[in-house]
Length: 441
Image (cartoon, rainbow, N blue to C red; front, side, top):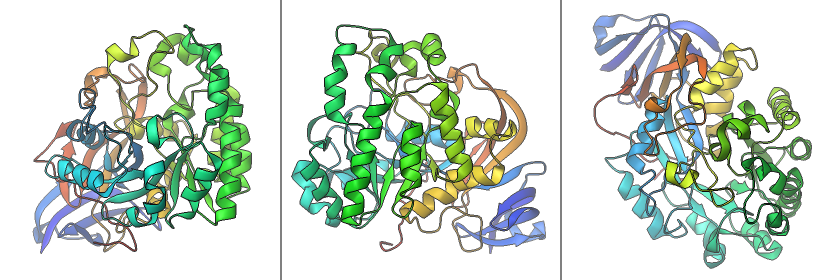
């Protein structure tokens, strides 16, 4: 029995973009080609639209539990679905931090029946669980281990070299790492202590702060024989280092680091442009694009990290770092496609195939028979304006408010379920935990 046929679209298959219909049965792709509409329970005409593999955002902060006043699992995953994202991997710095099997189980239970998209949760590396990481990373619904070398608090901060080395030797899955040097951050805090312009953010957290941490991480990971994934890379120097470590290190960049540049973004947005690591100058932005073109970058992640307007209104540096991003990832990157900065095929590799490959996701990342029927259906020619009114996150703002883009997500389908069409959520939340190769429980 065919449950759904998508008819008349352009389909991004592993062999290229072709004109074809798609058939879905029991949540999976059943056939690709020309087929009769009469054989399906539901048929959707997608003439003029392009079907991409479901976009996966591998770095989001959904704030639940403990910080639900600015986001929760329901609102954050609704934002994802509205933005054409079909799956997310959520970070561990909630309250309490996700450092135990019990905390992971609690998040999975909270997501059941409330999450609009498929999901997995990172376990945070911490002093108290450092010797249990290999056991924890094998738990169902776990995306892997996340380690903060800087820019975190409490036990989630692992800035001691001996502790970092121990963490890297405890486990086999690829470890995601926030690489900023905590010692240098503390040494340079005086540059902004007592108040400063938000434009000082990339001066305090300068390029050297990131480079030092990435150098240390690569040295210790190589010695430990551990695969690592370096999150939100922002500097030209890091990309040079990472290009020499592709046998064990993968690389993420964010849409905001590819799109915004200092000092203009701070002059225009103030603390709304504040994130860690910072938005840097144009020379670094161009270096990130070169790394995308050269294949050094493996994935795009949004680092969706919402804060309330009241928090962002605090004077710098009391204002928190972070911005929304999961809902705008697809339109921002499609606009770069329209501008000729990357091909549609490269967009697919960075937003779906790359994520599935890096973390070993089962049934995700490509349009192929037998894979999950996850589709991000886009109108590549649609011209729209991103606005705060469109944002589903509780905080209700985006740094891209007012930006005109070419390319827009118009339908989101997750395992054959149409969850968004024309900027409207449909049905009930149907998100399920992601499955990973080697742990299909």
